[in-house]
Length: 313
Ligand SMILES: [Zn+2]
Image (cartoon, rainbow, N blue to C red; front, side, top):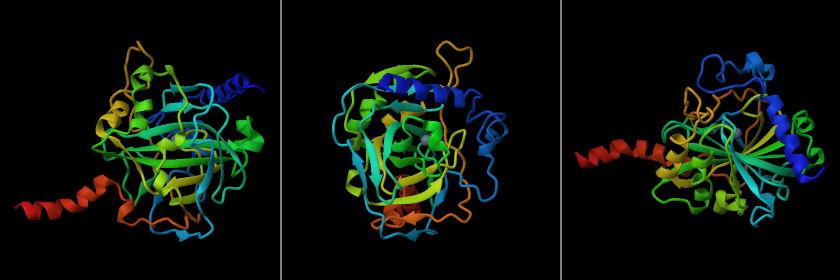
C-alpha cells in the first residue's frame, strides 16, 4: 500500500467511524451523550476511559525513562496536511516517524497530531493536574507498527495506540515553532478546509528539556468510538505559546462549514474527566510528581494572588 492509499484508507476509516456525528456543545451529542450512538463511550464502572485527573495518587516506576522518538528531530520528506475536521484541527503527517521505549510494548508509527482547547485561558486541556486544566493539550497519535495501516486492528488491541499528551500553557513570548501551525489556522477556520504544511521537526513542539518527566496509564481515545486501546504518555512540563497564539484557536475555528447558515465556533473540545477506578497511574523515573513546578502558570498566579494583594494593600 503506497502513501496515498494509506492516507485514503485512514481517511475512510475516520469518515466511517464518525459518520454518526458527535459534538461538544449540544445536549443531544455532547460527551455525556456519546454513549447513545457509540456504546463503547458509556463510562461503565471499571472501564478504562480517558481523560483522567492526574494527582498524587500515582506510583513511581523507576523503569520508565525517556521515549525514543525516531525522526522527530529531522525534517521529514513529503508534505503534511492541516485540517479542520469539525472537532479539532489535525496535522496529518506522512510515514517516517516512530515512537518506542519508555515502557511501551512495541514500536508505534506516528499518524497525526491534534489539539484540544477551551474558551479562555483557564480551561481547554483534557487531562487535569490536581483538578486544573491547562489552556490547551496536544495529542500525538501513534499506532502499533505491526498493524499499520489497519487502524481498526490497532483499536482492538488494548495497547494498539500510543498517544503522547503535551500540555500547552500561555506566556508572554510567541512560540516560533507553534506559529507554523497557528498562522495557518485562518486557512482551516471552517470544517473540511485543509492547508499544506512543509514538514518541520516535531520535536520543536515538545518540552525537549523535560522529556523524561511524564505520567503513564492505560486509557481510551477521548473521542468516539472511545476505544480502550491507548497507552497514554502525558508529559509533566508544558510547552508555552502566547495568548495571541491561543486566541487564534479559541476565536478562529468553527465546527461548521464555510457559508453555513449557522456559523458555530469550535472551542471547549475536551471530554470530561473519568474515574481511574483500579487503574495504576505511573510517574516516570524523573517525574517531579506534581510539584508546584508542574502546575499551570495560571494556577500559580491564583495561588499568589492573595499574597500579592496583601503586599499591595
Ligand atoms: Zn485528542
